[in-house]
Image 1 (tube, rainbow, N blue to C red):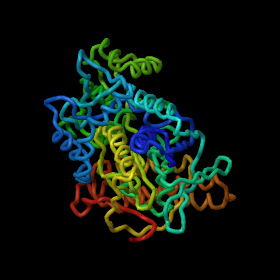
Image 2: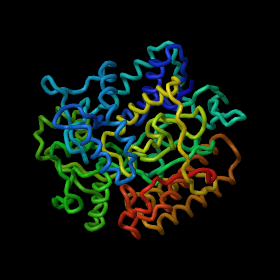
Image 3: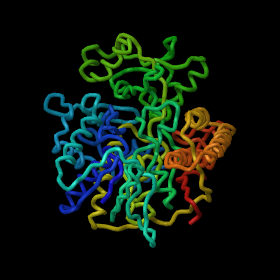
Image 4: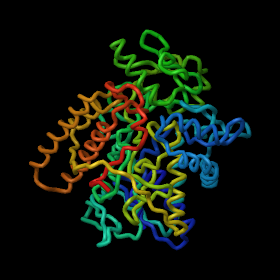
Length: 500
């Protein structure tokens, strides 16, 4: 078995496959070292119904509300209901979730009606990643191969996936099952919280191999990244759960003018509110006022943020934190069912690279680690042979193959035109820019690196085309000419190489 990707989804999938297939031999290939992934950058935590008065119904409803009508209710119910069991697995692996007296200390984040975020201070992702990495490295039947960049999926005469081809040493790894856990597309934008690895490799590979993709117009922007050139440091919204408030540079608290939950509204609303307010004031950013949080409490609950801010000359909570949104999470991805199965036989996708239907038009905070863990388990269960459900037929929009280009010009046009607030003219401009970049790229000699560039521009093209198909505003897709939701578009945007 081959797993491509080394974040929580890839490692957890390997861990669970070994649980259900004791004799399975697994290769994990990843394009950098084993420590680099979006998982390690996750500060906030993992959402799970853990204590009263919270309930599964409340978590389900919060997820549906954030998703703005595009969530698949059966997927939401499945994910939320299985969360506690998967958290028990992490506890068994030694993840030291922060406690308050005898109970777990639960954070509250935007869009949540209760405190339900289990966390390890403000470094939850790295703690979970370390625990899973230890489990993987200690398993003699799991082989890890870092610095392996996948360039193409392999398939047999029947169209079944049989592994992948990698740039390094022109390597081919064959496998009866291939799992893509390659993360999202945030690095296609000029400003992002994502690591360098988040260029959507798996999505491009699967699409080119014939798999359908869904909802790639739904890029979530995290509202609060430190506003400092060259310092894409995320400021967890758990701070807002502890009482921090977004204000303008002149001290005006503005978020309740846009949503009744104010600074604790879902991320789409808060990010859009920040941008709209900056357009009014002509300011480059806003401030996160943490003065209501006691300094000792701040330093204890958010030690990494506290120290990082001090290194940057910001002495919170006494001083407000300059923040602005940045590209953060790909809510769409490779279309899969509840067991991670794609259109292509023997090809699975888990984590941010997959579109399960959980997030809809906007991910609820801290549901990402939950989704990765739950569906890594469900995929492992399917791989073990307990089920083999196929995807239902879905109408696909006709689409020609596109190709992209990894230049600053691509990052800029996506940020400027396919960002937090969009216009039809801007989307068309992005489409023209990508076409021009493609023509320039095709003048260069054929090479493996050029193919990687083509993959990046392909993703940019898919994002733009998906956005052009959705003539409404819903969740993270805010289109000026169509500012309201339209029930005609209350469905996934599905794209493929041909109409099925």
